[in-house]
Amino acid sequence: MTTSPTLRLGSLPPLQISPGTLLTVLLFAVLMYPALSRAGDPPTTTALLAVGIGLFMILSVLAHEVAHAVVARAFGATVDHIALTLWGGHTQYRSRRMSSVGSVMVSLSGPFANLLLAGLATGLVQLTSPGEAAATFFSMTAWLNLVLAVFNLLPGLPMDGGRALESLLGAVLRSPELGTRITAWLGRAIAVAVIAYPLWRIVREGGAGTFSLLTLVWAMLIAGMLWQGATRALEGARLQGRIRTLDARTLAAPARILSPQTPLTQLGPDEDLTTVLVLDPAGARPGVVGRASRIDPEAAAAVPADHRAAVTVGAVARAIGELGALPASLHGDELIEEMLSHPAPAYLVIDEDGAARGVILSAEINALLRGR
Image (tube, rainbow, N blue to C red):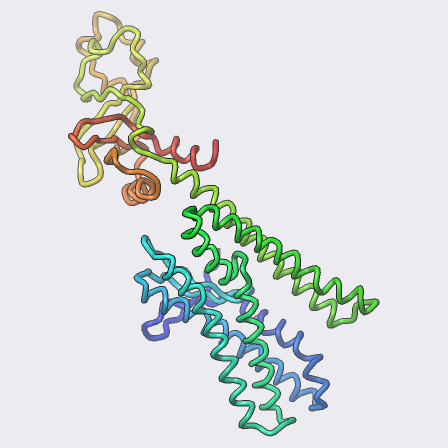
């Protein structure tokens, strides 16, 4: 698997540049060339101007993502990296507790950066003479940054406007999942509109020229990306809804904890061995109480009755790995975060008084989160 080249720009987060970024520049140049050629400049000048606009748009996307990163850091988030891709870019950041206001500010900072660039480019147009290549360059980049800002402000996921609306709806409705579902479906509607508009123009004009076809292909690619982003958001909302129902106290299955040195005679003749856990405290450390094993029913049954007092449960047990420890008070995101910080195949749930309440298996939590 190949990884994108990574650059370091001062104190900014690592910048990952996908090879698809070059394709984005070329696509911008191809889409811009027909409109620029009408100005009557030589083909070489027009081509260079089109490529220059494509490069400037990549820089505009970078400014957009840097704005996200800077504001996210200002609200206490950890920014992992900024990525430039075929579809533009994204900023990867993590925040355990960001307010709705912070989320909105982070979301809107990117489009605001593009509005600033549009204003700057418009001002530079005033310093040039009409008809000059520089005037064309700055006027086109101003218009494209304005379009980029407005498009990103559309109120549907995965656009920035959708993320801002998602945070606001989540706070107002007191249900982050419902806010995500509403904005994700708005995002799907926008994806359909992105394709419908160029199709409508082709039908209205009675046919499709080269530029119209290129625009339609580009619109289909963008719509596909938007639809996938909205779908992932819906899946995330379903997952978050399941996570919020998790409670360590109610998920803990009763278990009898035995030492590996416990003789087999301590097991009842009809005891359910699936509820028995053999715990070896060796290797215990913060977050881990020891190594756990399950008794093998066939191995235990094969021990003759007159030898059971001399055979320990540890001798007929199969190791399942380390046994983590979880406070019974954990639920929802806090429960998942604690499990992820101390990965283990099973966890001992401990009540406030220090007594073992039961055992949670990681496989069972994973099945619950997958909806099984």
